[in-house]
Image (tube, rainbow, N blue to C red; front, side, top):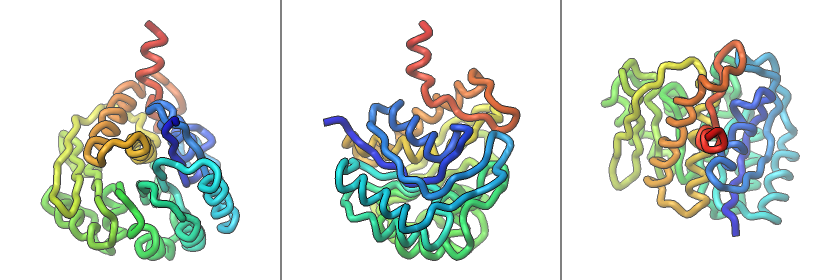
Length: 268
């Protein structure tokens, strides 16, 4: 049987982030993708102009219908938007599949995508269910109620603090650090592992967080152990960012190239 994965997230009509990015990522990594929408957004590469929320009970209906018919091998959770949607999502997740949570709070252009009261519900009801959470530094600070980490030493402290909230593992993304490389920290109760990648000089990074978490979920769905799934996902995303400028899409932060490997083969 083909590996399957479910994304629970918001929609990006410009195709670079959210559900659209997740489905592309699942496909690019050889996994059959499914989706339950939490919100519709009006956005493009220059920013978000509006958000329309899906009723919480309908979010739960989408999740339950997928789980009852095509059980996913892994689940990625992205934009949750509100406390009620967070609770409905948690209640509907009657599955033992690995869960990767990307705690989306702010869009690339600065538009808030998560209500303040939803942070506590996500922290208390969803994080303890997670196989892995993938916050960036501002998101980690918000989850912990503390300042954003500015050094790798502070990243290590915050990763350990995030583990106490219940997830089995934390991938704390260090892209916001002022450093020549982009250091990510994978932390588990067994230890920590720095995973550093060179920065690619491009403005076209729309949806990188969505893409990374979806790629990890895809690799978990294929049965890879967590450290291998994270490493494979980081390699995939690095390739997608490196090829992003070839797309030449949009006037703002353009999308990464989700099909960089496949399209390169087709083109020669």
